[in-house]
Image (cartoon, rainbow, N blue to C red; front, side, top):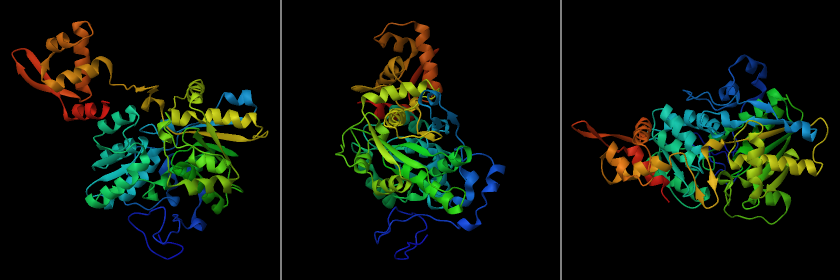
Amino acid sequence: MKCPKCGKEYRQIVPPRCSCGAFLEISYDYSRVDVSKWKHRERGVWRYKELLPGVAKIISLKEGGTPLVKAKISEKLGVDVFIKDETRNPTGSFRDRLATVGVSYGLPYADNGFIVASDGNAAASLAAYAARANKEAFVVVPKKVDKGKLIQMIAFGAKIIRYGESVDECIEYAKELSRLNGLYDITPENNIIGLEGQKTIAFELWEEINPTHVIVPTGSGSNLYSIYKGFKELLEIGVIEEIPKLIAVQTENCSPIAAEILGIEGKREFTKALGLYVKDPVNKELAIRAVKESGGTAVVVSEDELDFGERALTKEGVFAEYSSAVVIPALLKLHENGYFEKGDKVALVVTGSGLKSYYVEERERFSIGGTKLKILKLLREKPMYGYEIWENLEKPMKYQAVYQHIKELEALGLIEEAYKRGRRVYYKLTEKGERLLENFEE
């Protein structure tokens, strides 16, 4: 693409801004788009190929085409509310839309593999899609990251680099690692190619309900902007008359985008909604523009409201991470303020699964814990056989239960047979098991 201001061309990596300072935005020949063709294709991101970058080979795990469920809370509020359940993507988050386009487009440039800076979801997605493409994945993540997402990265074989306290610090580091090591960077703050995949949320919402409002959890602002771009393209094609009102939701602890929209003093402190812990979002200006040009607004919710939001979504049959649970308290605040009118159709974008994260006040919990974690720590010291492991466990349990844990750890690829002495089988940690302990210990 060419910069609209200075004419500089970009092909491999398309940054958010040109070197001249102008914003870059990928565009298409909208006069040639026939949306009637979409309904004859399989649901998913690549259903909308006319509005996606051209690629030689599509790397896909059947992402997109996620369910849109009418919420029971609609009856209570007297407003039609729909949940766009992005937890149903292959790795459990909306970032799979980014990964399929970023990896497919970047494949010719990724001889040495791919890299992404992420607070968790994009890293897990890249790990899966790079594995699918038979390429190495390098992920730069903050020291605090949801453990469920780490498990995914490890399981898919990504090379994990822990750097900084929040994702803000990871972005420039990933860019430098990409330059030095010949890695293709799909970080949206460094390369906007993947955002083209995320915008397909807007296309799917339009096809099903053509919403009047879309409530979006907002950290970096990239998803909010992506959805805005998707609706803007539908406006350009002529299938909608106006863009729905976009509503950015952040937590009170970390609200740089929402605070500017609302004209209040914002904070940049730690939030247990880790996916929204972005202190200085690169896409802030684009996100604010998306909200203002759509006639939308912003909402901030407290840390205490996160648990309520999570519980309310589970009553709808959706288990969301804290970063997504913000949509429910935001919806209720807007309703209490008389923001919605009769006949409105409100879409809540639930971006990531609660199975990927769990937070307890001063300690994070994760699925490889308890007895299994103790077994891994014992085997880090030396190879042991089943009875020896049982003897060394502090918590008393049946001997047969220990063998069940051993079988499950072996099935997960975290331990393996080291050697045999007679009938005794000695086990040791695998490389994956070593990485898991390294990343999970505090």
